[in-house]
Length: 199
Image 1 (cartoon, rainbow, N blue to C red):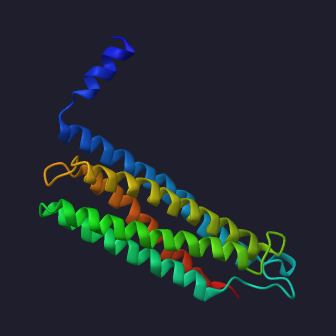
Image 2: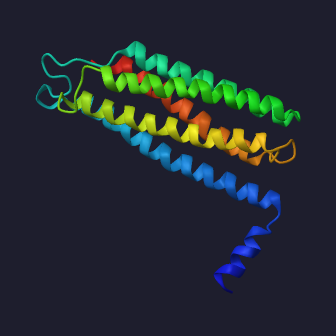
């Protein structure tokens, strides 16, 4: 069977089958990301407990502002709640509610991205300022990439809804985007919790 024939056959799979495959793919992607995120959490606590030669927070070293970390996490939570409202709207047949919830979620997510950029520009730490600074900076940048992905897929959902490609009986993409959106929200909150375990 040629590649073209295979592509044509897979294109004509039943919608339920396609939705199941997409859902499985996104869940595997989230699982892979969860392993990576867990490794960063492990690294954070491992370096903190090891503290070789006082390298976790050397004398005079500063830490990132906890209030800003929590503010970003809080904004991400609000964004997820807005998207969830839109997701529930399409389940009840309201495309307008999906568009409104998604748009509001995107606007709030833009605020989270802006706050992250502000954080990068103002934090009093460098990668060379010890183990805490290096792992915190890596985790902050990973979160930033997570937020950008949410913006990308969220814009896709909003655009598809506006073009009438999503309805009560065809909302699989809304669901899988929600999986990612809520996962990013969970990582933002878990990352913020680390601010309680600096010293």
